[in-house]
Image (cartoon, rainbow, N blue to C red):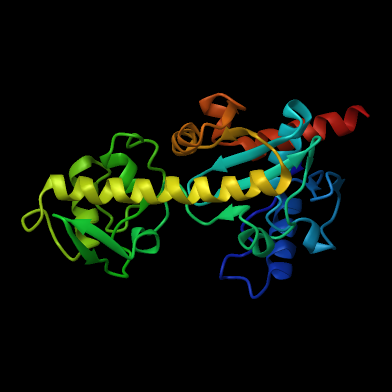
Length: 270
């Protein structure tokens, strides 16, 4: 069994080293034959050099995509983050840590479901007037895309901020709270306007990062996947950038796991 690790940054661990050690130990207890994928494209029995394994899921995806698509900008928007990975002649060319990628336009910590709207939008335009947002966990991007009809209630796979229903009215109530309002004070049209501004902000951030990575590495085509691939498609269409979808909807949502399985199978055949 091939394993790629993410979760070592959880605040229950004092360091990434401790997170990798604990996660890999638990995995080994359950799956003694597990092998761990490292950034270098190899599989290991242990995770002693923790830096090889920390949040390596994007590397597995990019490496597998590179085998099929060659030189591309690989973009995966999931529930929480957006990876923007330069792949040159089949090899990932990104920085090796999330810290490094955040500083190099290769990681945007915003996704399709779990991103706090107050982290995306410090002000919004409501009825033609700029309004500051409340820095509370009132609404998330899952509410935006549910309200706008881009995801289904079944796609909304995380908890709602208020524990309320995963339907249009529930999403609207949560979004209204971002400007300290409710559906009696501001209406559905206002809430939809706020949601559209959040969508616009995500598209603009993706466009800016993809442009920077594309120009830095002289790569003019993209390969995309993830729950939020519809956001990426909108961005790339606006940019006029050629792209391909690397997997069907089912595989796209678990693409790192699929990529690791394929890479492990190929390594065992060599």
